[in-house]
Amino acid sequence: MMNTVEEAKNTEMIAVKVEKFTRAAQISLRFLAMAATLAASCIVLTSKETVLIYGITADVKYSYSPSYKFFAAANLIACVFSAISLLLFYIMGLTSKSINYFFFFLHDLVVMTLLMAGCSAATAMGYLGKYGNKYAGWMPICGYFDKYCDRITIAVTLSYVAFFFYFILTVISVSKSKSSITQVIK
Image 1 (tube, rainbow, N blue to C red):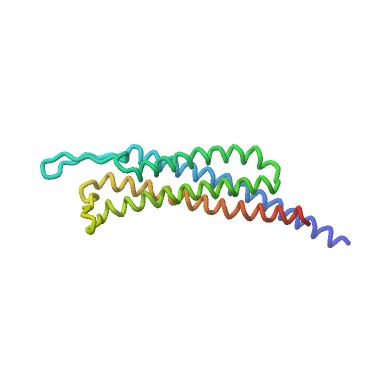
Image 2: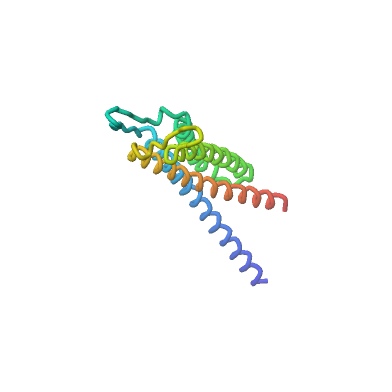
């Protein structure tokens, strides 16, 4: 009889430790995703360069490309949603109800998808900037605008990191949602 009571206490202690670790991981990942998306959007929004090419002054800004505008907007939206999710996680996370985890799963999935779309658009434009498209007659510009291309590359990398954080958050949220539902059913 004593053995089963001790096993139950150990199982409960392990469950509490896993819950604390999961909450800490979610808070950390949400904060890091918020920081990465904020940095990515700030870098893109401040990226511009002016150079002299064959006696002609040429400049490049993020606002010249609809893809980079979308990328900056997607990262700003993800940053704001990350801040909101941190606040909601603090408020709603104090009670571990399966419906809360389901809402976080939906939130994380939407933000992850938004980041994926923004990263894809920016990556496509970056590829064109670096290599051009000889069939369409588009010349690569990164040979002329090195600093601009380097800043955009850093921003896209940060956004991919935030996308990865949201991927992990999505997996955690769906896992917690599933385990909470199975506990309710039992």
